Length: 270
Image (cartoon, rainbow, N blue to C red; front, side):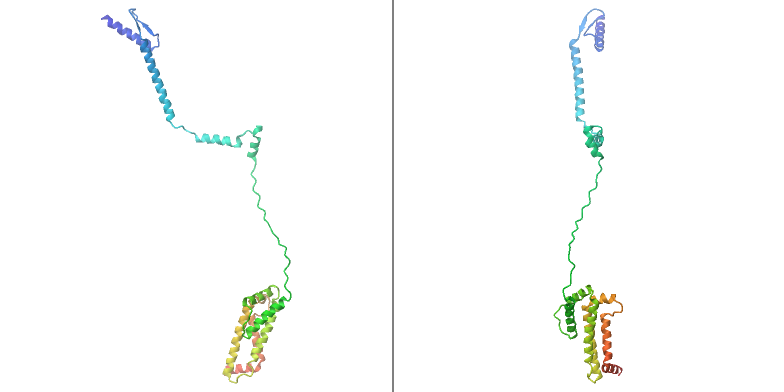
């Protein structure tokens, strides 16, 4: 009965000594025997080492599997600090150029220079006898209008001729020449009524035809000399328009032909 208790006590003593890190061999307190467990302790130490290695390996694998966290703010700040010349030390002689560039002010671009080309031209001069030749062309056209004949000169060229005379300050003389030419043709037309038919109805029909021709002729002349009518006439006081000038001439020469005037009044009243 006493032997099993001794064995139990010795086993307890051995296990407690191994946990406490004692010697590799344990003596029985009773002195009956000595028990050695070198193989069991070695196997246990190997198992503990294997468990630690396995634990460290799992942790290493987990660290490799975990995504690496990047601090973008810190990295960007570091990149800016590395690239910015403002953080360089101005006292460092190697960094003087970089420090000066950082403090250099940006100059605005210079404005583009305008290229001006000046052409030296002589003052244009009018050809000789310009006014006489131009008026000869216009006089021929006015005569063709009163005689109801076709004029070889284009109406556009006639209008341009009047324009040229007005631009060269010759509008006053042109107006007087047109008035003189119109007066001659109006006087001739009214004088042609003298001694016509004694029948008042026929005579009035001839007067009406003369008046209608006069109106058409003055409108055509005014169309050719329209620039004169809009510039010189408007800018000069006490000067009638071309149409008003024609009416005044017609009334003037009608009053000079007493026979024609008497027949017209008597025919209208009758």
